[in-house]
Picture: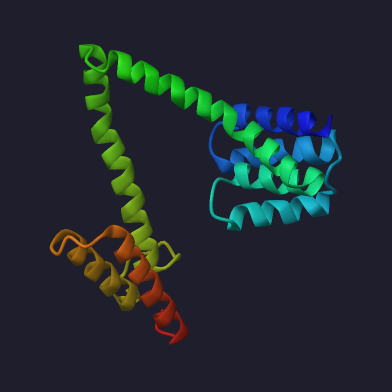
Length: 188
C-alpha cells in the first residue's frame, strides 16, 4: 500500500510541477509533510537542501530520498518512477509526433522559427553567467572590478574548444580542476 501511495504522490508531483525544480518543492512539501506526514517540516528542509545540492532534478532527487526513507530501495525506485512517468510519456508522445510529421511544412517552419529564440536564450544565459563570474554578484560591470583569473580561464577554454577542437567534457573537467586549484591558492 505504501508503494502505491508513493507512486501516486510523486506521479502528481511529476505531472503538476510545471516550471522546473523549484516549482516542485511546495508540491513535495504538501505531499510529504501535510498530506501523508512522511516527513516533519525539519526533515523536509533537509530533503530540500539535499535535493538541491545533489546532481539532477530536484523533484527526482526528492522522490528518491523520500522513497528511500519511507520504504527502502523499492520505495526509492517507485517514487522516482512516479515522478518521471509524466515527463516520459509526454516526451515520448512528442517524439512520436515529431517523427511522424517532421516533413510537414508547418512543423518544419515552426521549428525553424524557434531556433533563433533557443539560441538567444542559451546565449543570454551564457553571457549572464560570464558577467557573474568575471564581475561578481554586485551587478555592476566596471573595468576595475574584473576578476582576471576566471576571465583568462574562460578565454582559454573558448580557444581550445573552438580552435583546437578539444572534447568539451575534457575542457569542463580541466576547468573544474584549475578552478579548484586557483580557489585553493586564493586566486579565485
